[in-house]
Image (cartoon, rainbow, N blue to C red; front, side, top):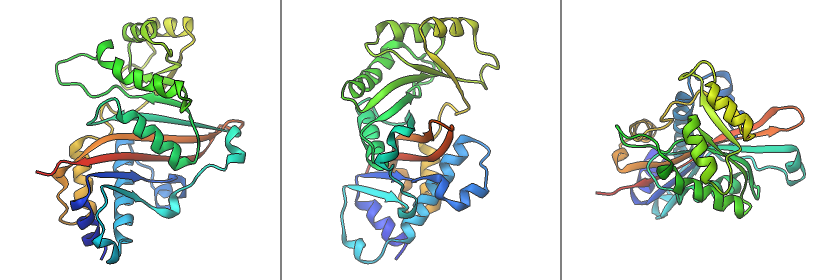
Length: 271
């Protein structure tokens, strides 16, 4: 049945949740080193879709699922509860085509996928803004409030930001109830950390980290292209990615990555 079954399911579903599982369990990805974070995401989504669709049999074709779960069974790896205290579970969340309440969905799905009660750290990438507008505190506030609620509900321990300059980081810090514990800086945009940002972060005990993610790690067009390439004749243009979460599980004592993967959700806008 393969891609025909997958296409039939996609035509009836309203949402798609995709989990890559632990990429370290994927032999093929280990051999190939993607040049950019964007390439890695597209590669992982395509391989997950292709593998998932190849396993769909004729019997499943009769089902109608509002939320379709797409994953590769052998790559899914939950954390052993006995090892939990020795591990740090971190995530970075990229909002693509949705609003702040979807943050809760992303964190709940990550906890469920990894078999943990809470994430140790979540960094949020700046939500997409229209061309010609600048990122502002007012725009960030609903997203940050959603993260604060998750901290208060003990679903996340620490929350952080990405790509905020000193002015915006200070505004957020002064306004927020739960203060940012970290701020990621893209070294492609500045080879040296800005001195005013460094001074403010040191004064307020905010950890400055570096990253090399593009502004849009997965845009609508990229996702639709990957969907089209993975499943023949699918109506890819109906599908809009909502958010993408990248997680990593690190052994605290040794700094070794034990697990790494992506979880994403998309919705279908049927015409």
